[in-house]
Amino acid sequence: MKKSTFLATAGLILTLHMGPVSANALQDAQDAIDSQNYAAALEQLRPLAREGNADASNLLGQMYEKGLGVDADEEEAARLYRQGANQGHLDSVTSLRALQNRAFSQEFDRLMPLAKAGNAEAQNRIGEMLEFGQGVERDVDAAYQWFHRAAEQGEVAAWHNLGRNYNFGSGVEQDFAIAEEWYRRAAERGYTKSLFFLGTLYATDHGQDESHSSDIIAYAWLKNAADLGDQTARPIAERLLLKLTAEEVETAKQLAERYKERYVP
View (tube, rainbow, N blue to C red):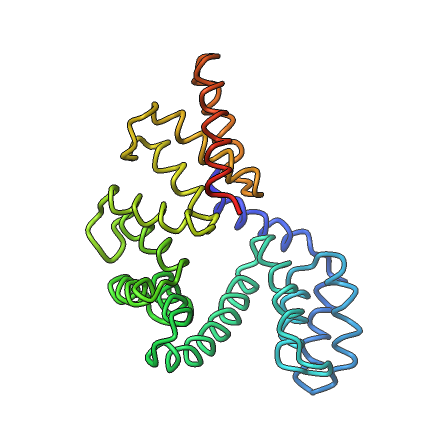
């Protein structure tokens, strides 16, 4: 079953099993909110939210987001929305996305003048927001241009992002060789995210280094990424070891140590 289908089904099951007492309490809470009796609404919603009722979590999140009867607290609102979203509650998903987009939009408006003025960190972040559509319409071509402007000023994170652009053909023609150049450049400056992407580049047989097999080199990169806490890298590295002979395993581990000396801060 697809994750989206599972979440929707889970949300439906929770709704179907919500008893009449809960339904009445939710209606009472909504009526209290409509009449601005926020204390009564909080009294109804808090116990239900603690029990995992997604409708209650969503309503309570709205109260925290808007400061209705409580101090406005967007972090608490996001936590409550996420509680419902994780159950497949569509209203909670919508509330969480809207809250995040408002925050992203404010961040974008704050950073754009700095980016235009030449701040490399702001330029890189603007590029990320454009690439992923965070608070602004997605525009991968514009994202690439901002990454390039930041990279020209020595912004290491932008070097990594350019590597990713070339890796996946986002805003620029796909070119694995150029992707690796940017990843390595960032890795040499201690940007550890690039270790994982270099590993996946070799795991998919798109790396340029032919001094060892792709699987050996992929393991060396991914082992270091895993040791730095990347949970996605760990199982991939472990699977790669299963493909290697005993002699190749030893070579891969030695190469990982050499990479660690050179690339891990």
